[in-house]
Image (tube, rainbow over all chains, first blue to last red; front, side, top):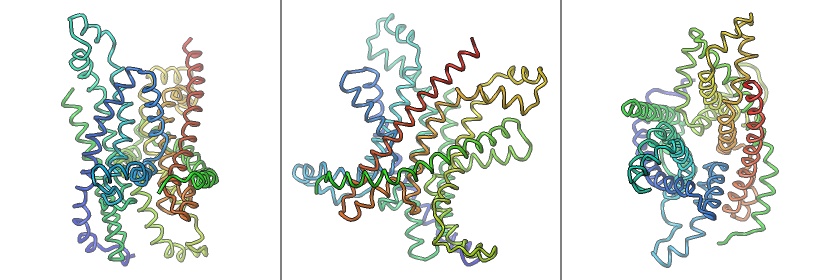
Length: 229
Length: 236
């Protein structure tokens, strides 16, 4: 057994693996930023019930909910260059086959989050009682003012716990990106394992890193919730 | 490069051929996890000493572990230690003859049990204390009260969460492709590998997943309707 696992190798490999957490957080940050913007758009459009658009959005949400993220990532990776490759090459002079795979991962997670967060936001907005909106109108506020000053702050409080769970989920989902050759925590563990021939230490280090940061993120959101109460 | 319809259809047929593997992974894991998750939640609800503390820590930590990392770690541990283990117990089955799907089952069941136990714990909280007292007052034992009064009332509370768990599990079962189990996605890629038509393969896989997911949603809607009937009957 001593052959397979050694503390020395583990100590040697751990700092190298944990330093790649920046790749994961880079993905989480950009995906959540644009995902949230997209989700607000999706939620508002869904609530407005504009004929054709609302059907398109419900198909989009159903697709994102019904298919695995890994498949979505792969479709983004192979499909976007095929769909938009010639456009980008001719108009912007960018060869989509050459850009980093991490961009496609982020696009896939953004689209995925647009659907999931969109549903969370929609639920939060509809949870605000309609008398609140009426109260806004009664004191002469416009629709946009009522929404941003009265409905949104209340919806924010409802959505926050779900948002936190979702963000931890996105962080955990970043463990899929190594399949596209992005060197994140798990990818680093894999490459180090292939280079040294000792895989177990690396994967155990990666496991510890994922668990620790998931718990930290979860704890941070719980703290934030408590503060806002 | 363009989208080739005939290789897409070929991938679609191949994906459907391997759909039973995904369904098996999803269904068996779901049933076992539901039982284990209810067991864990019940222990934690009644604050059984030692066990409830153990599960509280275990579930909290394990929920922090992504399924993909768990799968790869278990697969690696299995690969590393199987030969020693087999030698010690005189098992003559070669490692290459063992279907890695068992590792998939193990990882999926462990992860899903933890998340389901959290939902069941939430459902426990949704049931009034007087319901237990009503059970005890007519002379039912603790176990009888649980089985005849508490669990049936938890079903309608749990249904929406279970629908999400089931669809989540359907999607999580996709990850076993990383430990070389052939399921819908890898099945759809089999013809794609010949013609380099990866996009067609992945789109075909997405379509099959989507169809199964839609079926689950449909079934859940029917179940929800029926459980609602039951709720109205008991209340009215």
